[in-house]
Length: 433
Image (cartoon, rainbow, N blue to C red):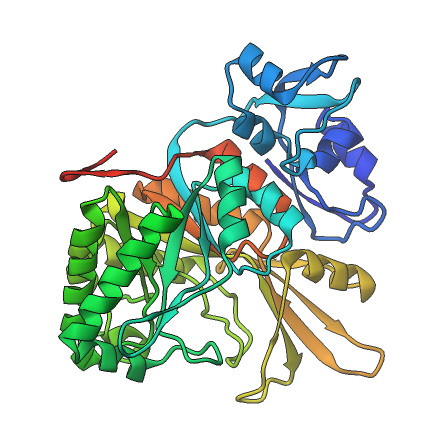
């Protein structure tokens, strides 16, 4: 259930109306400020079916054994623990919610290596796998490394998988179609990159590789498919999997460099999973729009399902907002913010949060003391719930967040009560188990 704050409501009164304690509602909506509610703010409301009051000598490991759960599940159902094992007598822990659903779902998320470690620790229990972003490569197939050691160590400790990301980037972090073309033009360089990638995945213990090759030229489309197919073949020898990130297409003939180099059907056959990038309709240098309007997400999924089996598809979900200055001027950059920051701005400028029913997305409008007008599109538990509904409706294999670097605890609680994040699969012959 989701409660939308109305004028004059207090946090404690909302909790009481649903038969919850203030502490329970707060834990479900971290890091909400109970004294700074905003009209239109969406709050997640879950009914605990079983609660354990911590006794002296209790540990999470012991409680997991008693209730037939894993420690990961206890972390998922109690985001206030922040992925840390410390508990104390008198503390109440949710063992199960009335709405708890055990439908399996792959839940992955990209993360930059500079992510706050406490944030990463809190998110990992909800992830099937973390995807450190990103390894690059040179035109002769040598890898450009990233500092992923601590992320991998933390993922292993949390019982989460890890997927190596590979992308053709410039030294400034921009996608480089020239680099991809140079690589594909050289069989030696292509073979070298495949060998280096498989070897590094083995050495570092990655469960698989995700190719994020964006802005691939149309004439390189077939070469990209061959590269992906051969990389998958080599990874499969070691039980590892390959996934590809695909631009949000709605037809095979869709024009534009972002789309033309991605052959959905061929790449869907070559890879084990396809992550559809169903976000960025509202983007940094574009006009103010919802970032992932539900009707556009649906169109991409419907096309994707016409080319790729549902059991191979992961739906992309944004975990951020954009703040545009009005009037919009072409080429002007929006500021990327967290969903939490959008709510803070609404409180700071005393404006209500509105919700676009067609897009299934929240937004705010505000004016600074200097007279500058702004509009912010972001995500909340309503918009995330609408996307999860699509995943269930279409029977998708999973979801993938861009990125997990910004806090959104209620999102992870929502996901893990709607679904059960499944372990990363291992490739065995023609089956993924």
